[in-house]
Image 1 (cartoon, rainbow, N blue to C red):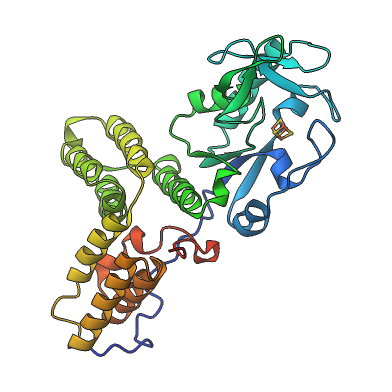
Image 2: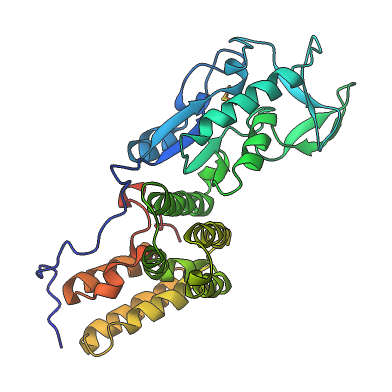
Length: 337
Ligand code: SF4
């Protein structure tokens, strides 16, 4: 049995997730969320979590489609009109149709954003330009027809289908917030592996290996399909394999985790300590897993305990597992029950 001192020689072995210096983590954001007074009424909707908590870990790329398209601030309010699937952008009082101006601006701006290599985008909810869901669409008499998407946000999602996108309102929900951040950091790791250097088959194997438990926490089916893709990578060009892997990887992370999936993963992880933990330590771990399963403690409790054992026992395979530190601890995710 190995002694479980918290001050063992590998006390710093489990790395924290952080944006790499040569590939900064950039997020697009509706500019009003940063506190800039760009709304139609000259106001803003500064978001505390985005600015003060997430802000220090990312590089923002602020975009205000309505100001950048030339409508000025303050400006007459607009809304979506006519067709839920393909709405027009029209001012509410004077009924001026700004659709074509917005479309031309959007085409140019999306080309610029491609070179920014964004890892995610936070949009302002309910906006006829920035809303990604349930934006109200009216008929010409002002009657509600249904809901659709803001023009800029819709075009962005069509142009960049892999980039994780969320609205600031939904990020108030801790589960949705955690899911979004996990996808953002996941996509950034993938970008760092593929964009800043030439990916080799070995890199692909390594990426897949270190993401094993994170992928299993989302979707076992995707993990297996990705494994087959890696195993058959030599039949295709590296570029083709990487493209297919990236698409499926992001599809996997889009599948929501559950307590049950996490418990399953944690039990697998604990299996790596077999024969090295004292019976007391094993009992402690088992009790903590049971408490997590019952919803008595948050996910951060078993994960922190496991990270401690990984450090003390120095288990190289687990040390590399992204699942144990998928995002910076300062974001205080995985703390909800
Ligand atoms: S919601 Fe979008 S268009 Fe409206 S002020 Fe904010 S950034 Fe500008």
